[in-house]
Image (cartoon, rainbow over all chains, first blue to last red; front, side):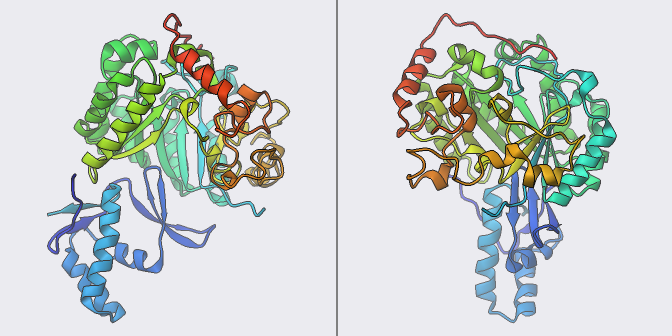
Length: 96
Length: 360
């Protein structure tokens, strides 16, 4: 079985056809993708906002750990799980 | 019940189509070109839909590329804030038109597949040379850079091609494939004897999909619509009637689902006469099967009613001749045995010929 994973030096990329959108009717941020709409909680939104196509997973977790004053290992695990979940659904890609 | 805002809208821009697939989900009574909504009316409907809460817009048909104003419609939808998905056979899409659609902001393309080779695809689509044109256009779609979903509609005559269809999706770098076993509404209802898969085929398809999902995890997403005549429990009716999506026909009628016009006694509002927000929240057709008050036994006291909402109303209409009945697919329906016999009979009718969709 194929494995979906993301390494610390990988650069997450939001691919074409996937975009952040503020849903003004429901008052929440969503990720729009082919045939999928993902409601984002504040954590998911914070992670996605750090993805700029150049920052590595390491850099992103560092920024988030500082911003939220949280232990880096915990943040790393959260970010990794969240992004791997999106990759599995072909909503996120990585550049290695 | 509190009525949620809709997430998705299917805009059937036209019923015109170069193909004549025998399973077309369009109604038997097709809308003529001169009854189609003009560009400005569609643009207004898109803005109303976005204000209502729609996020995903599916531009469909017929063949949406038959509309010369397709790029203008995509632009209007993007300006309204909608995610735009083009559901197409790709016949009529040239490289130049795809670039126009790209500039207009089209988000995603869903390409239909009638078969995995010219002999099958052209016979099922009823259009000689269609497969070659489709594959050429598919190359352009990928070159422009659109994310691609392949939509393979499968049935007794082409189910043996399912593994190849999945391979093709990978080769074409599609992110997704939808494997849909024909659902018998619209023109497909005329073709049950020619297209109904056998029970063995239906089970084999489920195995192939499960294996491919495991093998291609993270590479290709597979959405699957199983063969409902052979199931023990019905499909979720539109994720709940009037809760998730709506469908606008070429001439502006607003339907809770594709086939809703087959339900006798329902009347449908038109975007030319009434604001979309009123149609969604107050329209008679949308309120007809919301909630559970309309349900009969065995649905009324069944725990599964919150999972499948009693199943498909159009199927209840077609088989039980009563749109309030339990979907006859359900193992608890008094008509389940009859449904099973129907399915077995149709699926072994080796002499049945295809009835092709007519033109509008």
